[in-house]
Image (cartoon, rainbow over all chains, first blue to last red; front, side, top):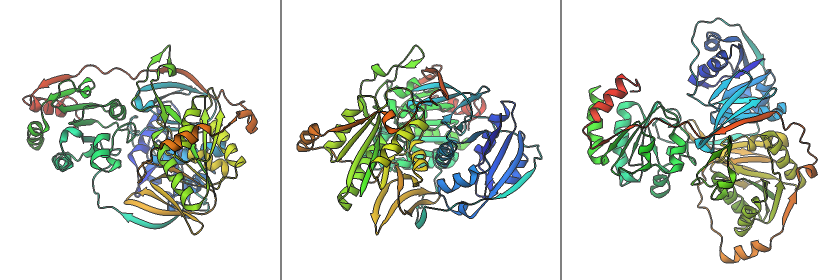
Length: 304
Length: 252
């Protein structure tokens, strides 16, 4: 079976998830063709074990984002089963490639075995399902669910010039001052809920986040009631995250919040209510108010 | 202008999902609701209808219970209700074909839907439908308007947000929007009860079900149980926890 992996880049480098896509397919004992849109990261990709060849698809359409144009250009060199990250762009491009190729798409896969049999969370993690795929498909893989492939290869790189008409024109960029890491990108997340008392108290979470290089998240309650940005919201109607460490402060743990973060590797919960549902999924629970706990947490982290 | 909004009925996000015999038990779902992001698409559709004097068409694909959701949509101002009565296991590509056929049959100029549904969380429908219709597609938008024969939408970018324009047939998938969602008034609810729902079978859309076996469901399960954690009263154990996270778990 042939596998085509569509690389995702971060500036001129590969996005770390690309190593995971390649690793997931290498674990099936298969080699893959890696497509690098506009050549971004193609040299880097050629050095990753498990890569048979790299195709750099170069075209003007990659200068701005129009999923449909990207999918057209990329699809021209896709073969077999197509693997792409379950990032927002990956999901969009993957859906379009599936529609073009008239094959099914399975999104947000967290485990893949030969066969091909995949596992994926459904209902935002309230359940999982195992699917067997007959024939070719597009499969998007959840970021951080797979081991990285290692460097040590020298695969050939070919260049294909292929562009497509852009139908989405950017007319104005609106920059936001937010320098803070996005919750979906972060390896450590510290989130606050209604128990934080007010939006002003999130500064305490931010200062701990800064010392850890962590992202700050929020529960739905504080996004809806205090007007925190929706991009911070973790849960079924916000972001689904699976960081190495998730620290929940003043979050009771409504079912829809748990759905968005239960796959975190380690969960620490701080809440003054010993019966808060968040404690049922926490690895470490601290029954205390945030006012008591955060200063100690911070000073301990500073000692590291 | 004919505006279509694609609505999906899903278990309410507060509902518990139970699994029995390797399958999610839909009968035990306590409440079915319109998928949350679809609500923002609907609100935007209502605003576009008011601004352009157009017709708003709601299309839902799924079992009989979807009719309740369509009636709810009529109560806030949807003009035409279309129910594709597809009760069974259809893969994403098939559902996209059903929806695209219904969209074509109704002379639609613009399609609005949620960025992903709260049950599958996939986000395949909008881009897939756009591809089948050969339409422009913008995903994760927070607002859309129709200005001087162009659709202007706002989507996230690496550095914040960006305003983009598309011409002609366009599909927009909604993230959380900027507008408050409207609630129906009594008059709307009474009018909606009389509204006719046009029901179409997938076969009537000229579609075959021949590919239904490309994805075989082997099992659905409850998420793996976590081993119970350690809960400490008070803040005394924080140094120990930090040390364990640092030295045993290696996560900080």
